[in-house]
Length: 206
Image (cartoon, rainbow, N blue to C red; front, side, top):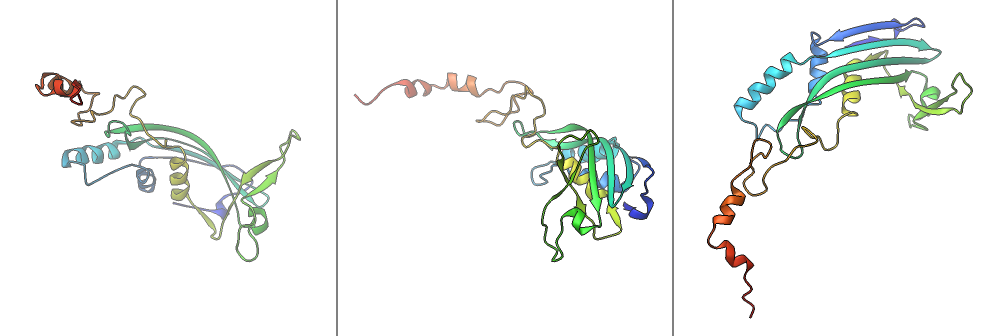
């Protein structure tokens, strides 16, 4: 979806979008984790079904201030991730508020005449006269903002480095690979009943 700059004025432009928008579904799906080489057809079918039913809510408010286009939004959805402990798929809930700034002005965006970035931010003072802060401003070469790129970026920034299906995830058995969240494996019992297991505790160096 393209949000054209001519549509953004000093008055608030409000948008409310959901999963009925195909481009929005595709954008969220780009953040999903997958490893097709290890996924069975049954799991793939379940993932495809869950993606169709996935709820997505994107609310956006845009307005223009001088040469800056300000977008404030909130996205609520879920992302399909792989647990870093048990390697199973789970839905990671996401409720994220964000603000993005854009400008076609090179100086405002910190772009030199040669096209190089001289800085990644512009300084703006708060109304309460507090110390100014650094704010990222994206330089626009087109007359529109690519909403899909914005959604993908904001979602990816919120994903955990080591996703967990739950804080109490037990992981998998390092010997047989059994998912310990589904029950105990038999490795410990088998090891105890192994007649050669006692040899491991004996010292034959004498």
